[in-house]
Length: 115
Image 1: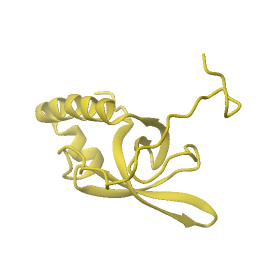
Image 2: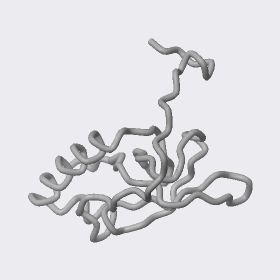
Image 3: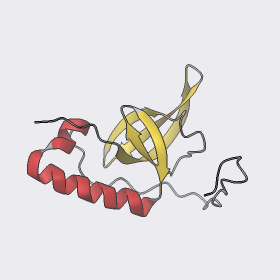
Image 4: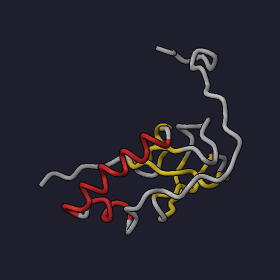
């Protein structure tokens, strides 16, 4: 059997600094883990990120995060791999804290490629 690492979506519930790096507490359906946010410096409390080996590697919207978690839960129902990866969390993430909505960023304004 071939092992595969997953990037799992979770909700950032708080952000703090550790050794000069931004670190978030990320909620994976009730199980909270720390994740380095240095690859996603624009991420804020209430955002969803994909976490892989302890690093938030990209941001996703809530709908995509929930769809991905549903697929992972379906896989988990057959082999328990999500519980193996995360512990006992296989539930939808907690609701984000109430915050005013943020305006979407235009990648061209941030010096990135909007293509």
